[in-house]
Length: 144
Image 1: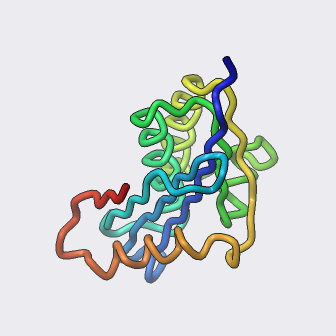
Image 2: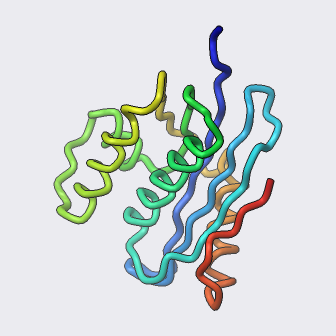
């Protein structure tokens, strides 16, 4: 039996670079129905570190939900090109995130990483900014 594909939308936001940062994640089934939304304030981080943090949380959440076939969408050109092997990961801080990604990737039957426009990623962007706005409480917020 073929497992259904899920669609994951991620965004990391930092106000200042580095600055106050948050992540936003939206996971949908193959028909576009929301399965889970998450957002979390992550403290001081660069925008790229926030993007990678969103990716790691998203893949972990997919595991929790038992999803094995995923398409991850991000508006970060750097993230997508690094994950797809088009750019090398030179930054030492980002290398540890990249290694986590490679480890998590092994648990998926299929995993695609696609770049989308900021316009197509508004939901995750809104969640990431909501996390920064709610920075007093740094716990993970989950809907769905």
